[in-house]
View (tube, rainbow, N blue to C red):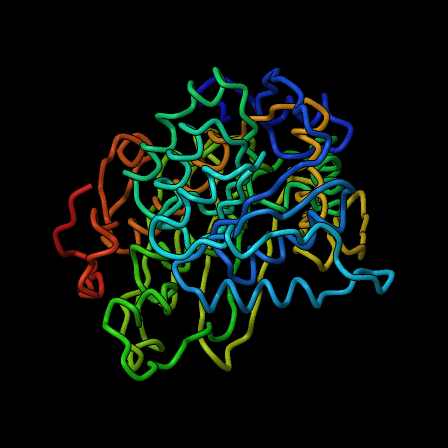
Length: 425
């Protein structure tokens, strides 16, 4: 998916009328049943948002199975789906899931995948994505992978090890990088490719926001239950801010540069989250260098009462481009252009999930999502260690943060990472 491995992202834009994320088209059999049956693993806000977009965007699609580690999550989200009204004020079609197809527990993903579905949406916190993906591929299910697809290098290696099997079985693997389906971003990139800002020389990427959610401890919760309920605040569960959220912007820069970075050097720390526990940072700054010699500076922050900035700033020899999800895009300089259109990237993403099966387009985007996730992991590790981390080094790493036995994890956390301390990749 990058120049390093011989496949150029640029080629896709010249062959696709829409400019979606690059992938490999794999022939596969059409489903016998014209109704596409969907299973959801991970009943949070993003998961049910994806289900709504799928059911509202295409006809003859049904949600037939749901799974989560908590019963209350399933109950709450299923009730919300049944109450949801479409744009024409009608009930959301296709919510046909029965009580016996609502599964709870750490093995709920297996029961969803083993049920009578065509595609499984893997939308849990990202620590579980490699485990769930392995099972889905072995079962021969088409898969939607929400970003990021792992929180450690070991998870990425497990995902990539399945690439040949995905292709051999003709499975669709659709990624959750909705920016690559966002119409203003697609048009802006087309203009960049056509030379409207001259030669691209560098870029900046930002994900600076306010506070993030935090859930107070409920009576009777074990330490493990408390942290599973606050998964964003645990390094191995979320991957930290760089991996969980800023990965979107890093993916856009990889898309624009048409390559993956060769090294990362960064810093970060924890000043705001200190009273809550957990072990993630609340600010990062990372410089990425690419094989072409171009550099991208990356900034991510989650601190209240600070000035926010999200999006990407691309610098060329004849102008600059600004890209921001759901807030349009613009080019300034010799060839000015702007678009304030809402991108609807999530809806196009949902449509692609269904169309990839129904129209016999088995698109495998596994390597793309793994490369962009690893870009974020590389930046996080550069900040955690204070060391230069190379692409070759991180891609060969088998560093494993996720515990082997999730169900019996005792809730203990690693200390907050300190630069200069030993950390073996």
